[in-house]
Image 1 (cartoon, rainbow, N blue to C red):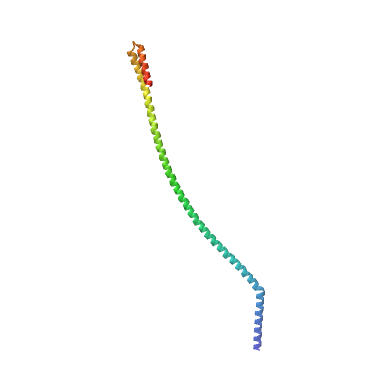
Image 2: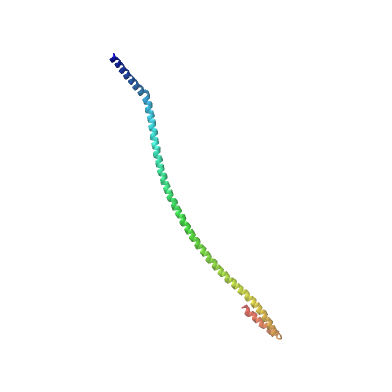
Amino acid sequence: MISIMLFFRILNLIIFAILFAYIFKQYIYPGLRQQIAHYLGNLKNLKSSISLAKQKQVDLDTDYVQQKREAQALLDNVKKWNMIIAHNKEKIDYEVALRLKAIKHVRDKQEAHYAQSLMQKRLISQAFNEATLVLRNEYSQDREKAERVIDEIIKVVQK
């Protein structure tokens, strides 16, 4: 009797195993397979996204380095241009100072010449008036001779 019970227990176990295998294969396995395929697809997409992100990061790093080089080159050019501008400004300032000095020198000469000319005119006028007065006093009897001498003086002064 033990052997019959054992036989039925083993038979029940085999039937349950077959039934479980059938239910698993018919209902559970396709759903699991579909979920695993879905997760594998998501995993593949994530790996692809990670790969693209890494490539973008490499591209961004390359662009950053390139832009940094270009910015440094531009900064160097700006410094060079500033030095050239400063040098040109110094040169122009020096030339302007020289021109102003030359203009001042010419103007000082003109002012001195004008002052000298003005002084000469005043002195000539004063000398003429004094000479006329002296000649008229000296030639008071011969008025005509005094006028001739004065006319000669005027001609000499006008030259």
